[in-house]
Each structure stands twice: as structure tokens, then as C-alpha cells.
Image: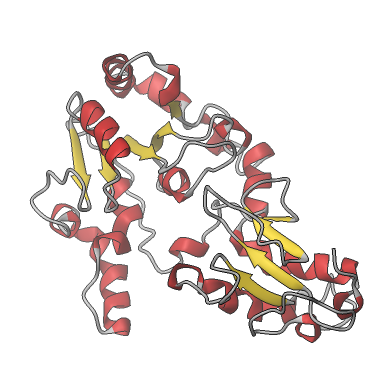
Length: 305
């Protein structure tokens, strides 16, 4: 395989935000269950040729952005959609392996909504501002920050500092607010999750972070979001006629222990159904699944599509 990420096809340069692709596929050699021969025999970590001949590595192109588009020069396309050659969802732990996973057993009653964002997209900010003005909340990150700074979570929740400090020592840098994002949001009943782009099947870590932290996501995004998550696990913001109606509902659920508990009923059953399939198709398992497809295509002997 030749690994190609989203970039201009003329240069085949690797954007920094997609550099992890190269690292991930180095683990392909442990997927021998699927591979009749070591995967690395079909792996070449150089820029791909526009034309491929039999015996040369298969060309793999990955684009997990909402505007995903095939390059036109790949033999295997990796995207977030189930119709792509290899699907890679955002539901796994790949994006946050180094973060503090402490989950608070208690939820705040006076401040019910958590939000953090440092990419201040205008449309998302406007929606967030309207809703958050109606509910007691803490906003971390750069956008609409109301906690007095970018890294106030540790002063609010000292128990979140242990793992973050250890990571900081290892990296010789001070912990950032996202290092303890899961731990901080676990103290809140709800987490506001708004996608940058609303399009089918584009469900990102914004939603999964909240589920992993033991909170209930208030979600604005993919219209088919229920194909990717546990039943009854989120508040679908698109189903409400106004931010006022949504805020009224969220506050009523926060005040009703039975109603709130219903959003967590799925946790008694574990990771099953659509959610189980979504996690199984995440970046965590991508090396094995890609290696399997390369084997089925015949590796270097596979034909160009």
C-alpha cells in the first residue's frame, strides 16, 4: 500500500493533522490473522504514483473530513461513511489515549451543561451562545469561555490533574485543557456537542467524548446520528423548535432523576447494536481492517481499480 492523505494530488504532501495515518499503519504487521503474507510487503511509505502497475503497492487514500472526496488516484479509499471502501469512524479511543480517564461518580446540580470549543466557527458559536444563555453552564476552551481562562478545569476539579500532570512531565510541557477534557466533562449531566458541518454519517469525537465521560450529549449534527449511537443516549437538538424549548426540556430532565437515568439505561447492556458496530469500525481497528482488504485484493498483485 502507498498511503496518501487529503492533500493536493500534485504534491502528495501529508498535512500535519493527518500525519497519524503513517504511524497507524505501521502496526499492520500484527494483523496476521487476516494476512496471508505480512502486510508490510504491500506497504510503501512514499508518495504514490498517478499510474500503478501490477506488482506495485496498492494506493490508499484517507479523508475523514465532512467534505470527503476521492483523489481519483487510489485503489482503496478510507472515509467515515459506510459506503467507502474502508470505513473509519470517530468512535474509538485513538483520539484520546493520553487523556485523563477519571470519571466523576457525582454530577453537579447547579451547573448542568458543559461545553468546550477552541475553533470558533460562526454558525456553531451563534447556536451555542443562544442555547447556553438559557441554561446554567461552564464553557471551557477559547469560544464563549465563562470560567475565567483556558485551563481552569484543574482548579475546579483537582482530581483531574493526576494523569494530566504525568503526561506533562513526560512531554516536558504544561498540561492543556484538552488533556483532562473527559475528566472535567464527567462532572456535568449534559455536554453540548455541535458538529462543524451537518451532513449524513459525519459523527465526530464531539459526541463520543461525552458518552465516554458518562454524560448525556445535547447533539446537533448528522441527521442519521441514531445509526451510530446507543438507543436513548442523547438529546437530539434538531427535534426542538427553538433553543428555548430545548433549554426547558434539558432543565426539566436535569431536575428529574428518573428521567435523567433513562438516558443512561443503555450502559447496563454495554456496547451493542449500532454503537458496537460503530466502535468496531473506528480508527482503533483500521490497521487490521485495511490489512484484511489488502489481502483480499491480492496485495501487490491486486489489480488497479
